[in-house]
Length: 194
Length: 194
Image (tube, rainbow over all chains, first blue to last red; front, side, top):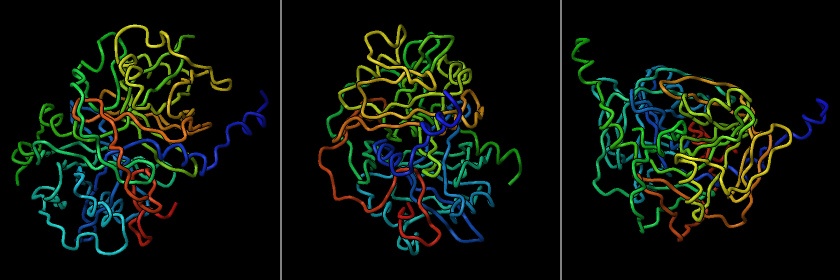
């Protein structure tokens, strides 16, 4: 196939891409940091676990956002998992205006980043790598503290432009599967290498 | 705080990290590629959307996996979104044995990667960057083709070591929110900049 032919076949419009990618379900998180002495934060779904040893998380933030600026400046951020009753948090941190108004939080005493109280759980991370990709920056963060705050948590989900809940019907545990996104396909059963 | 004190406070065990991170809900995907003429693939949840212009996706794969090897060699991969009736696909691609046994797929004629038929949707990507992080490789992929195959799709979820479904009760659309993980917190309302 000639180069022009190949290029013609490899052009995906933003609208076409959005139509498909909005069907990738995700948990809703809020990413916080500090920027020039002020708490900053934003709602995010592009968050994933990378490794357990050492514990590493990745988040993708819009380059021009105040939150990305804060993370770059302080070298630290917190990731909060939001419960299905916390939709107003997600909306507030995705809206214009003061994201922290009425929000209960503490300041992490080592990194200085704000840690929200009314969440399912959180991670405090130090930036190990920052990778610019298109109009976003990927922050690879080493987890230095984490806590699960609710014993039987229900996550807030995002799917096809709507906030959603998880089905209350839980199936049997799927063995040793762990959620960091990759199976061991080199001989060990399933994700059981953890 | 002295350096030893700080280090003592910043040590998170793998078990502690897993206890929290497994409560990050995610959609279930299968990543495929080719390795030495053979189709390879694995179940993965560490997948996120990075940008729409250009369309870019990130996946994190175990460095030692056959799939990561295939992606490195061919420079291409496909990401498949799995439906809530496709749990057996997720289990098969996370298990030992022949991942493609009985699986209906086609070969993408430009990149050569296998594209599964019975899925919610898929993306074919060319690798733009490969970033090693701990025992994983992050592949940043430019989307060159994508398709939504089901009009009213229901995704397969993964949460707390179980396959789950999304609640059937959909709330009103949340405006222009898009799922690539980051809000515009620099003045525009919500995620409405897309």
